[in-house]
Image (cartoon, rainbow, N blue to C red):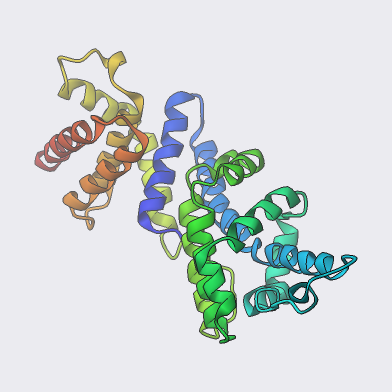
Length: 298
């Protein structure tokens, strides 16, 4: 489930926590890394679990409209395509999915206000109207609709961000990745494949844990190398995020000879564009390149 970009970010964040709290043991750093990685999958599960309650919200609206004193013809004979969508039915009746959602206590039950607001936004959109007007009923159509909802309604959604922040500090920055995986899942279901819990590391667990361990154990050494490489800078003035990114990159290059140095440098430069200052990418690029070459010649 977690690709190397995400794993590098998790490693960097773990090492940043260590830089901010030098009393953190290697075991504690490993536990934090594991928890942080597990949190991405939990977020994916939480967002995938949104499908059924959103469908239930639409169904509740239809029932309420039918029970009005004088319902309109449309309210008496509503379009049931969305409330009968196959994706929600498959997930709600999947014992493995429901079991893990229950075990992880991932529930939307207390967020009815958000669900109402989200449904109002969805039903006002052109993609939803086109879905409802299309006479075709298929898992492919249902999956396409939910991909649109994941992509257009939930990214940069302030109400959702507030909910996620309340639930877990470890969910910061992972929403877009989790939603991308939700899209893959509904498309897979539409192809007739049963839902299964994604493997968390996809065979990359050793990579990320070895990266953190090597960077942790050589943290002071690499930090000293950085200070010597920029003699004109006061060590205390170096931006700690840049320092940790460079240390992580140097550790990767020093311990994973099969990864081309150019790939390692590009990866941490890209991460710096998101987590550091506007000028950091050039600083990280130049210094990481210099230190990796220094390690290669020694």
